[in-house]
Length: 463
Image 1: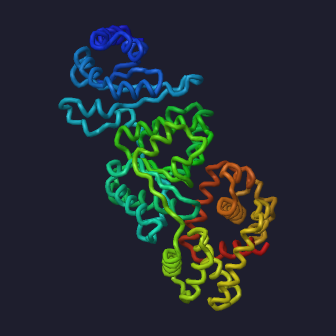
Image 2 (image 1 turned 30 degrees about the vertical axis):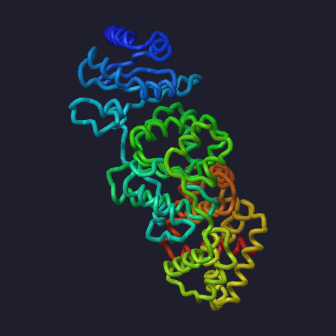
Image 3 (image 1 turned 135 degrees about the vertical axis):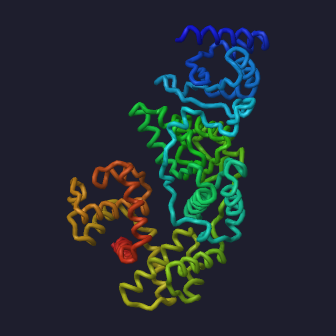
């Protein structure tokens, strides 16, 4: 350690000792270690995030005045927080309240430390482009959530932070949070927006530990302006992942960055989650999206039919809305299935066809769809040997079968992307995510391929 730095820090400690009780000094200041003084920034190491938060909340003014006196006016402060004692892993965090009190540097509005700014690069927001406010159908069950979401999109970091949206599967949570992200990017293009599933976050965290780049992982997430985490309930029981997210949450929230999360249940009902995280989830706004009522189901169906350029009789729309009430996903799936039946069998779209398809859906839900079944159906459809999937072949038809199988497995099965990748071609989770995104985009832009996907779904239905 630099002897000059040690001497200066000891001078700081003497001033602090004169201004606090002996017990306070011993508890909060005695174990602080000065690490470096570069540029105009002093970095000190503290033993835990709790110590960092306590110093920030109670002694930041004392630290500021002491550093100004010993090291010069305008000296800035960084903390190196020990986050994993076993592996000696740390993360560096700035102090928004401290820097915003800087008297006259003219940079008080920028709370991002210079070291972190140097790591900031362009990133893929990973938003699902088809989900926007324009095609999000409003009803009684989602009106509050939609209104809050628009407020957050208009003023990220200032209105309802964090935003916690919960509801059962298929009610439109993912659509809504992606719509927020899309609107923020439109209104505030300078902000770094990232949408990520809780599962992918957990995989990235684990990889960062195995590859010994945890600090890079933390710096990346600390550079985000709007962090959107889907299905936060998947953190349950993952203590180390929760700990990493806790530190990221604290850093972003302290620096006025927007946090948005979804879950299949309210914060109070989350099991296997640390209490300190649950408390933070409740800091902002908690909004529930309920299952769509009859009128909203009809509106969603009309929107889907209109968006796809289809023609459905009103009695068919009403019949579907009356008999399919589980989720928006099921409603849209019925429309796709009816269209596929109509196209393949050259049948009119009428109430009889609707009854047949809705009845088939009920039978389908009772079936146990396996990954082997999906692989076989997709392989048969494209006339590719099942064994080819597990080879390293990059032939277009083999790659397509892999990607479609991965997409359908993610759609129909309760399996992680890592397990899907292991089973289909022995690929990693990133390959599965790329495949799902590729197939979704292709289905969105290529009508012929969309019809192929519908036919494969029908083949699964009748297999």
